[in-house]
Length: 305
Image: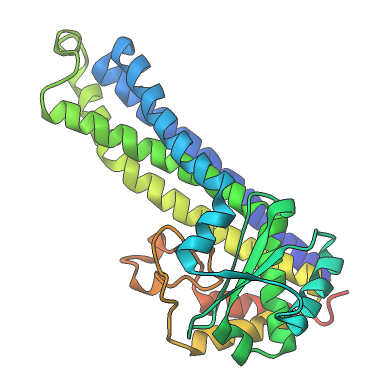
């Protein structure tokens, strides 16, 4: 029963992720349709590919160099077994349980307990830990954190995030570019004279609201991937108590990592920016209390076999 529970949670979060990605696709279509309605096919055929191309180059470039980029932005330093033998031992336990390749390991000199995973696929994965998390967590708690980060690797979350960021970036660039053209009097006024005014107003509304909607969808996708990683971690360790206790340690500590840029906030096991979010809708992680409650409920079902 317990195994069916975490498998059901994992399946549900995968399904919600696919739904949200599909919603991003629909939103992209709506923006493209708004462009066609307001500017006509000729202008749209030039602008849309241009905006999408810029976003694809930027985001996919970051995706393929994600490990090096994140190391630079977080100040993480790659270490070897000789540097941290006990940490490597616990990581290898999770590697064996997950069937994944051994990732690179890095440590971040920071007084806040936290960890992250990056890399474009399992063969290029890297997991990192702050010095503080290694100090405050026991073996079971650390194993839970490692399993969570390895779950991000197994679930290809870097790829999913890149797809979401690419789509949201394209929508933001396209909407901003077209709004500027509208503001300065661009567009096909001759063609617009024959257009339904209601359709033109709706197109304008779509272009204004689309970037906000894309950001909300991207944040929701990130939250579902975090919940999926929690459930997948339990499938690796069969021990929801380890991750649950680790999250309780994080919840009790109010310090945040120094490197808390928007660009990398979503990769940490506890986001350093969610507490400052205007709304939970813009948070990249589920509330940590909800994650703890979910894991506690899984514990009540008995041993994970």
